[in-house]
Structure formats: C-alpha cells, structure tokens
Length: 277
View 1: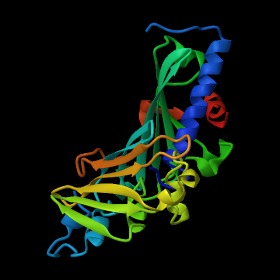
View 2 (view 1 turned 180 degrees about the vertical axis):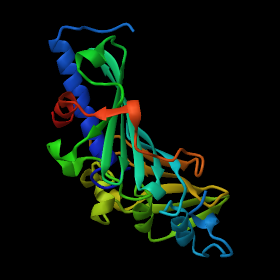
View 3 (view 1 turned 135 degrees about the vertical axis):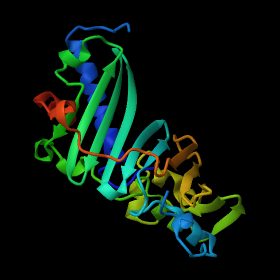
C-alpha cells in the first residue's frame, strides 16, 4: 500500500531501475561477484471517542498534529520502512534490495523535507562498488530539475503515507471487534487515490472481488492506528497476498532534519544517471 505518485510506488520503480543499472554496470566492468503520541482517537483532550466504529478508526489515522513516528509497509514481496515527521513536512523512505548476479545488496533511502530531496545509497557484498560506480556513501542532495521526470520523485504528501484513511473510507461499515481491533471491507476500485495505492495488485483481474477486500485494523492503547492489513484474494496469475501497513513509535522516532556538514554533498552525475536510467 502506498500513497499517491511520488512515494513508495515511485520508490519501487526507482529502486528496481537502480539495481538493474548497477547490475549491468558491474557486469560490463568484469567485476564478478564479491565475497563478501498525539493525533488519533486517544489524543484528544476532554473529548469522548466517536460512537461509530468507522469514525473511531478514521480518528486513529495519523494526521499533521502527530509527533514523528515510524512506519513500514509490506506490499506483496516488497517491504518499505521509514519515518514521518508531520511538523517538518518531512518523510524518510527506505528499501533494501538484493541482486544475485552479480551478488550485492543495495540499501536506498530518500529523505524529503518540504520540497528538498536527498538520497543515500549503501552497497554491500562487493568490495569497491561505491568507488567503481562513483557513488558516495554520504547523503546526496538532489536537484529535481535534473531528474528525467521530477514529478515522480518522492514528495511529502501528508502524515498518512500508506493512504489508510482513503482505504478505510471505502468501507460501507466497520465493525468493532473489541480490544482495539476493527474489521471491514475495502473497495479498491472506489477512487483514483485508492486505486493508485495498490500498484502491486492487479485490481482489474480481481473483478467484483476488488470491491470487497477484507481488512483488519488495530488501534493501540494510545489511540493511534498501529496496523492495517488487507487480505487480497488470488486472481488470474496473481497469488493471494497480504498488504500490511504498520505505524509505530509515535513521539519516539527521530525528528527529520536536513543532512549537514560532512554527511552530505551535491549528487554527482553518476547518481542522476542511475535514477534517470
């Protein structure tokens, strides 16, 4: 599950492209393989929780009044992790991807504060890969105008990076199961925001089943949404899958600031070549 264009969906495409470029480059170079808690229903002061379960669940979704928190999404085989800092209009989004031939692991992280964008790449499993590809290990400040499609670069789009509120709203009713657990049925065809949140799912192949995908949501004792899990059925060549979003560490996650000093540099041409393909 992702937000609209510019967050995890874009990140997946960039990461896949970057890994393909790195693999092709290393092979052509003949390197071979290497060896080696505010917000939410519980945060309101002096106000009782809404009686309607759907309203209660929506009130638990992170908003701009929340402190920094961590999140993770499991979208089929892809897992993303990150931090959201609503006060700074900032987000950090990371993914780890392993390549088998040649063998190396790429950890890519984007940090966004307002309109500013940085990227950090960590390559392991093949000695000297950073130097060979002319990619620094520090944060790289990116110029959006140098990206082939700057509109698809990650941007901050609010405190709900997995678009959970839009998904919950598509459910006609939500049932309170007790102990902070809620269930319902999401309509993945309801609107453009919801459809774009499931780029790993073939919504068309699901047919009518896409209009009633069961979900389970859990709200923690602090009133914050802690998880949303959708059970997507099998359809055509697509296997059944779970789409899981977790929000946690409200008020405990680090606040996001711009990289400074010797931890950052301007992105070299090699970084743009990788991103632009």
